[in-house]
Length: 326
Image 1: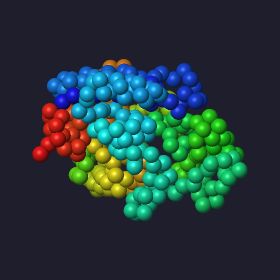
Image 2 (image 1 turned 135 degrees about the vertical axis):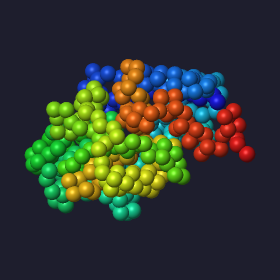
Image 3 (image 1 turned 180 degrees about the horizontal axis):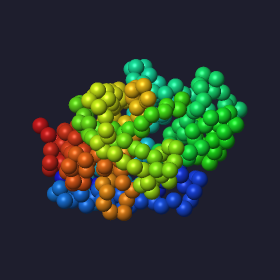
């Protein structure tokens, strides 16, 4: 199988760089780890950098003649691959282009618990009368905890205005303001399509902060517990909600569902991560939460990524040689 791992500068930190240009970019380290793991699985693997020059990227990609592409990490990349009919691993444009607010509306329609929210697009429309303090504020299309610090948990209107202003002016996105749910932060990884496999659940505990902010996360300062200590009922419910979220949003091949298990035992879905980090605790790249899950499941990086890859190959109806399966 000929696999092309594409990588993009600042993949995980591009939004945070609007606040701090000095954050470390581990995109190439991450891609190298993926390539090494897939090579160990016996695949022919090449790396190609995604660039703004689409024609140049297309020519470089076609020169490699890949059977499938791994590591697409932006709406633009996914749109390009779908338009060109190139098989790739991961969710499609219908999901990755959908903002968090729309995803939450879909979840609510399917009666999947998610915090109540409002979207604020300008400084003139900061109206949160439908919500109750404390609130949590984040970018509408954020990723990698970009723009998140302890101050994003807001207890007053004055602080709310300050945080919303940061997101509007520096992140340059609308702000999603939602009820702050007090409880345990969990994240659940899944691999597959029709009947996705749920990996061991991660609980993220905070180390000297109030929430899993950007520096806390990207510097691997969290206290990770995997598998999370859940009783039988909690584990069954968390897995059920994660699978429902994965399916109703139309995720493909792999993904990670972030949630808060509230103090009264309700798992509130915060979001679905379609570009979930897959790096294991090895090498220079930031450790992905699904990497912790893979390690807890006894999987090596090669076994882990190969499972995701073969999930995509089955969906594309491709055999090991890259031709369409009969």
